[in-house]
Image 1 (cartoon, rainbow, N blue to C red):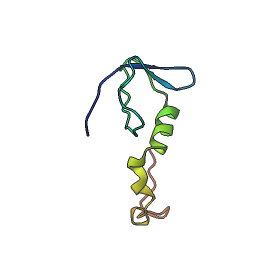
Image 2: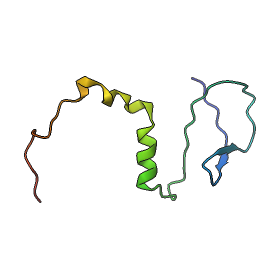
Image 3: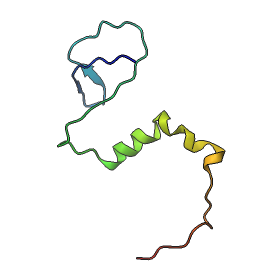
Length: 77
């Protein structure tokens, strides 16, 4: 994959607007959003992002379902 770095802003509706238009036309792209560390991301945002991320699709496979409620011992602190 080739990477292009640019900047942009996210509006109140959560839509990303790039500061400079890209010369790419009608292509599917992957977007990685880097946020300054001083910005706190709420837990709900993380959970929403993870639940829609295809990187975790393997967890829905039957072979990944190896534990049941009867496994392990209760932990009481």
